[in-house]
Amino acid sequence: MSEAESVTIYTDGACRGNPGLGAWAAVLVAAGREKELVGVSEDTTNNQMELEAAIRGFRALERRCRVVVVTDSQYLYKGMTEWVDGWKRRGWRRSDKGAVRNRDQWEALVDLSTRHDVEWRWVRGHAGHPMNERCDRLANEAMDAYSAR
Image 1 (cartoon, rainbow, N blue to C red):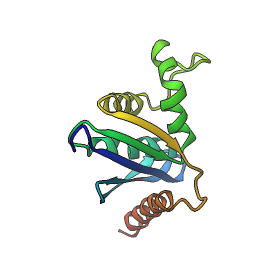
Image 2: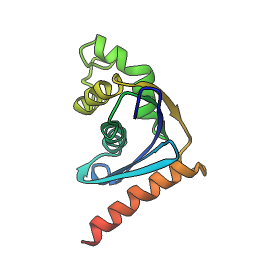
Image 3: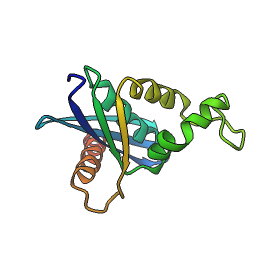
Image 4: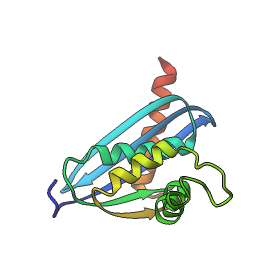
């Protein structure tokens, strides 16, 4: 994608148990094309899967572009729009002085997202948003397929 191009990355993470079996899904939409990305992890948390969906979406981008990330995760949305600058200023510490959980994923996501012009959007989960529902379905189908092996 060239700089003038834009892509929307729809993301979702899911987990059965917390920690437990989890999966992430991202659907990239650009120039009338769509690409689905899905993955599974055996011992993870829902928040880790939410982060992984966004990370994998960004990793699939080949060139700098305008990116809109759509998530139903307040953790991901607020992390990137409200919390991350403070975490970095405090040496990856929360305001209560505790260590930021999933720091490796947050650092990867910050690095990947700074390569693009990014807008973060939050949508209510399980509220009928077609692409959010699709990502949720993809993640759950991935867990089902993994469990059936």
